[in-house]
Amino acid sequence: MAKHIRTRLLPQEGDPSPAAVTISQFWGGSEIETEEQARKFELLRLAFFLVKLRKLEETQAQPLALERDEELAFRGNLLRHVIFQQVITLTNLNARQQALQLIAAYRHG
Image (cartoon, rainbow, N blue to C red; front, side, top):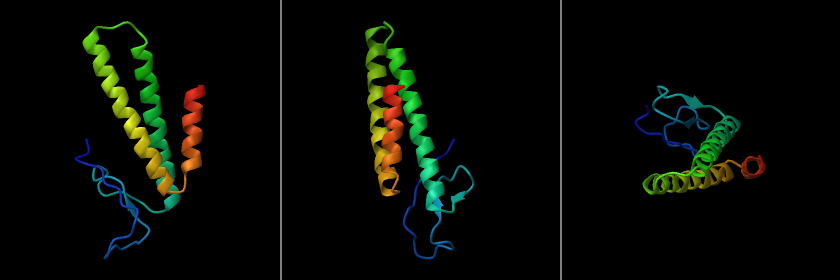
């Protein structure tokens, strides 16, 4: 598993490629070369988090013990926060409309 994920959207001094965006050290320093690739990656992450939230909400609909309900509610809050952060990231990548379309599809699906 990745030790941490770091995203760099602005070029740093000394970068060999000023448009490069480092995603994760887990992938051995893999880099996304274009802003379009970064948008697609972040949209994919948003879709993943939306699917996880849907599965969690389906689990919450089943009668469970009180402790389990509280844990699921906590996880749901965390996922909603992550989704909010993804929308901010996608807004910075000029993909806010696409992010909102994914969220709308999640709500209606």
